[in-house]
Image: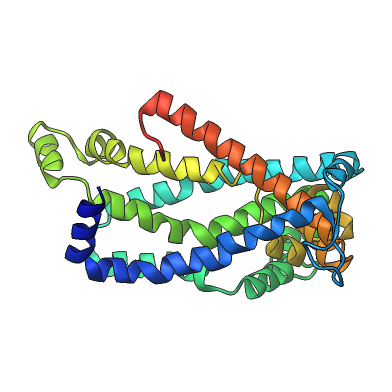
Length: 301
């Protein structure tokens, strides 16, 4: 095995050289910081350092389980991800299928550019746009007032936070995420399309019987990875959009960790909550991979 590896490295040395920065990034920024997880089991004091602080075991984990906001945080985080999966996961697949059916090259490139652009908009700018649009005197309320509804600040309505969050996620990421499915479609053997055409299949039947089956492995892998983040919601967008009036439906684990860990300087408690969250994600990833392997023979490992 080592001889085969050495031979492979010599043959593809430039490819392995390109891999070094990627490995360095993950080692430095993902694996080395994992040593700090011990903070979750200690009463961290900056003057003592992580390893010099007093050991408290599972104290902060138990404190979180007894926290009055525990159920709310778990519910909001899980439901936001469920809504995002139901609405946001199929969207890139549908977009890729639609883009694949466009024959005009210039028109196709224009549409793709328009779909990809929102991904490059700064999150702060995007949230600023959303806040302005949802304000009492914003564009959305102007339209609603024209129809006959009474204007009100949409972001101050707790029950509208999740739809606004999911829809803006869809606008920002659907086009960009469709790239991987477009690449998978391009990898499908053209002879399959030719054979289907000879057999009398129209465009819709070729899509159903050739394109979709060719996408299944990619869809399964991406779905497993998405389930591995079922309890992860980026705190940046949440804290830019929520307010005390919407905490009941908008407050998630990551925003809670931000408030307790950064604003209140309760680092050990925040580390314990973050570690607990990561363990749940890992459990979902393992379960989703196992179920996928049993059902489709497609899995990450």
